Length: 169
Length: 169
DNA sequence: TTACTCATGTAACAAGTTACATGATTTA
DNA sequence: TAAATCATGTAACTTGTTACATGAGTAA
Image (cartoon, rainbow over all chains, first blue to last red; front, side, top):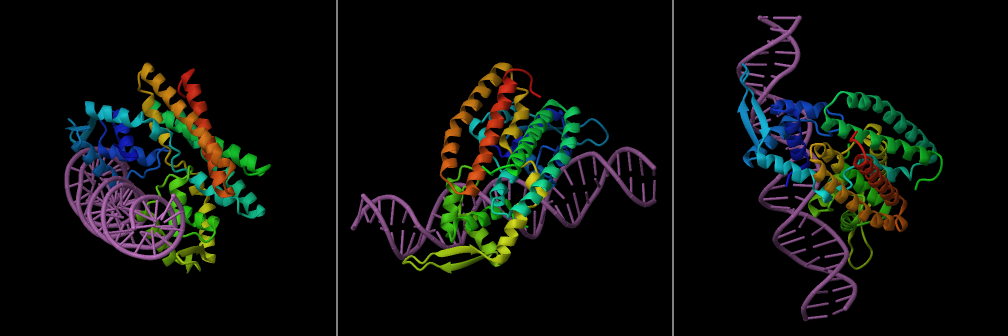
């Protein structure tokens, strides 16, 4: 069993090709589709755990700096596949901040709600260009994730439009 | 600043009307749209924190059992509204297990992928009736959350259909 | 040579998990 | 009266956060 972060770390290492833990951190910190901060206190211990479980192997780089380059072992690849193909976990609803808050919006007075929905729509529409830029210039793994993030944002916009012009159901 | 769980707890207390912490736990444990387990070790400390911050007030029930019934204070209501109307937080992408795994699916061989997508579709379609039942029989707050969960599942089905008959983009 | 980036970590803290403990009330 | 449910908690653990420490290589 892997945590969501551990699964994402294995995916990043496999995808990036001999990345250092530092590069994994940076990938997380700059990703639009990943929610984690890429904090040292999360990534280094997680890499240590995954190494101890035999999922990651490390080798020194040949350059001057000689950083620890990470790669997946055979069992690491298997663990990643198991994690990614877990049907129950993959289809669970997840922690969606929009959904979690939407219930509360029903008890807002109409004027406040109208203002809020306008602000939400503006924020989402403003975020789409960034997503679309990333979509053009990344590797398949991140591309697919960004594409799904865009779909979520579009679905939110449709929901807002429906709620603005009618009932909240 | 509230955590997602704390926000959801305040929403539940406001929505439920003088619930006990135990009833909040059960609501979380049985909810289709909430990801938390409603564990005692999460809920009781959170209620304690929220009480200490003046967001929750408690009173003894008049019945034999005399349980601690919870209600929101004025500042608790304000804190809930602030949390629910935080535009940046409400529109952030969240931790979606489907999106997190989807990137890895690109490197599966076609046969495996076909099988996986069939299983994912079946699981999602199998879950929809439960969601739809809940939709008929709950209060507005949970109703809206379930409705959004259904939309997420439908969007996933559309994505799978598109990926099955074409390219993954 | 000063500042920035690369690189690896630890410490204190936050907030969730499971598992356990305890007891009152209600139902079969 | 035995079992189930209601009710409130704590303890040990896991895994994330921020903030700090340290040092090597690189660019201005």
